[in-house]
Length: 215
Length: 256
Ligand SMILES: Nc1ncnc2c1ncn2[C@@H]1O[C@H](COP(=O)(O)OP(=O)(O)OP(=O)(O)O)[C@@H](O)[C@H]1O
Ligand SMILES: [Mg+2]
Image (cartoon, rainbow over the protein chains, first blue to last red):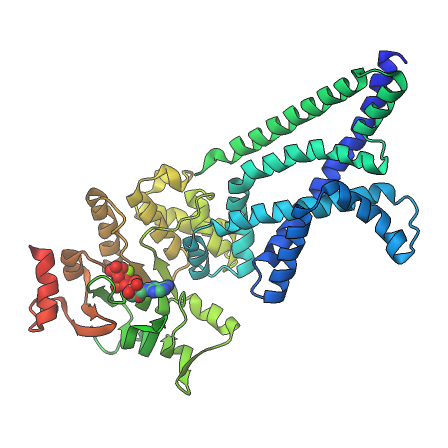
């Protein structure tokens, strides 16, 4: 197999990797906010459920979660869902990352000084307006560094989708490496992950800078 | 102050305890339109708590509270009952509060800090809100700071912005909780000057302060609080020449 064919296949895999990455972020970032609300809820039951959820998601291997999400519908409920592989991967990733993001949101929200809520209350903002206009924008600035960390981890974690034989970049690299008995494809994949993360880090840095107009 | 003026704030027999410790014990107070009332007293006497109860940042344990004759809270079976939320929101529009540490919104520019509540909460057209804000900034000597962010301002400037933010909602009564105690002495003057100007325009104000000379100059009435009760109340002259031992001792501390 020529190098260009190998690269083409890896790049195709990279496309799937990027898809997993972006879809996971799109779903887990808002879901994480919801879970963090649950975690901080006044209702003890909601709070406990959220806590258990976060604890399980963070306390068990993501690889195991991928397998469970993929196989549970059939083995537990006898359901056969066509074309379920990719959705299963996104569901598992989103559920897992939402737990991490929830804790990050919570730490950010809890770090906000009470004076911001009080000022908003006296000015007549509703609770929803206070959160959306006053609290959340400041929380986003505060949590950007830990979110960057998680995002970089996510780029690498996408490779776990190989357990479900999803044709993302790592799976492709492994297959080609086995067929060609060469370590080259794996090295190339490593380089691609690295470049991907350079771009992610650069984008997050830009975002941080953009929010640096206030302290 | 002539009694013919409308009563804007009426507080009757309010009580408030934290963890079983009574911080406010049966406080009553009424404030008429145009009146400037200063609240003085030692640390921990309950001055902030009184302001926080009046501005509904704290829920009272007992007593009643009304603005312009509209009841916000009343006592029933020994408990304090607040009127429904919708009603409270209306009553909220009557007052503003200036905090010791400003509590400006750091992610908003000075202009946005001032116009956001009128636009979002009161649905004032943006153009009108801006005009109102520009007038306030001019009045408070901040015209060149409209586009600055709070972190770029001195403490005195931040406090003046927070006063402008409160005034932008056109409250009938404005509370201040030690508006200058987070400021360096040289910045205190500029904020006190602004408050004095507001007093001249007959803005109704209740000011918790440790600035005795300022309280004496600006107030129509001074209230001396200690251990959760109003120990003495009167005109500045009455308070500064009080026969009450505690009042004399307290004021004496500031004049040495
Ligand atoms: N949220 C709270 N929880 C528990 N105790 C509180 C709370 N707020 C105030 N207190 C207590 O209530 C008492 C009165 O406090 P308050 O802040 O009203 O005093 P103050 O007169 O404003 O004092 P200062 O001049 O120091 O500002 C103090 O003993 C304080 O410790
Ligand atoms: Mg106080």
